[in-house]
Image (tube, rainbow, N blue to C red):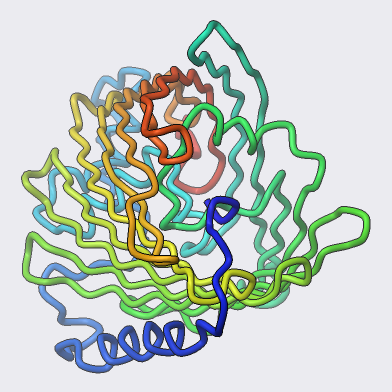
Length: 352
């Protein structure tokens, strides 16, 4: 989205500092529960509770996944949110968990006018176990999209495919607790010339009763190619039932190259578990920019159906979406995205 932001004169450091101050205040004034006695507490991104079936119990091919997603039956909002994110292979799984994970997907995009695009992406995060699991190696086809980047039109999504500039990075776990997660990530984009970067990711997780959860994330970063930037995201998750998750996301992005122009976004995500192997979700939202004055920049909506194709680690997804941008007079641009995704890791390991 940064390529649509118009440069403005004078510095935006004060706004960035204000955002940092507000988030810091939020973290420090959050009610203090004990790490082990927060109501409904679970690990920030923990593998969902599993129930081993007796050996004599007949097992259908998909029943192991039902075991792994036993958290769906829990009233804990953390379990509901985590299970939805694990099922969808959400980006935060690769940034907040420990362990070795990998994601490989291939997509076909059908857009207006009969245009068809094909491509694939990959992301590997490996534990370096000799260093007590505090250091991870990341190799990816591209830097993970930021948590607050919700727009993924066919055109925009296609820009992430077939990249020739993969990223290699180290993720250093500074702190990993139930409520706090702090990680430092130096890395390189393999291009000519080499493009180094350094990111710090700070996340605070706070249950708000049994049915609401707040997740605040701050990501200050430096890129050799574009300078400093600061991202702030606040998610409010609500468990409407053990099958339904509602998520409100508010985000802000400040980039050094665009000074006072800050990009804002707001989205609403709702998912419903049809069966242990089928989930449907919808996402609507908007983005705004603050310079030369506050204005809406784009609107989007999509609906997704995701199915467990095989053993809980191969998934198929169909997504219909529409994007309306100011640059095209808010003309609706529809697209259909078909994806086959393979997920590897301790959660997705089939039990024989």
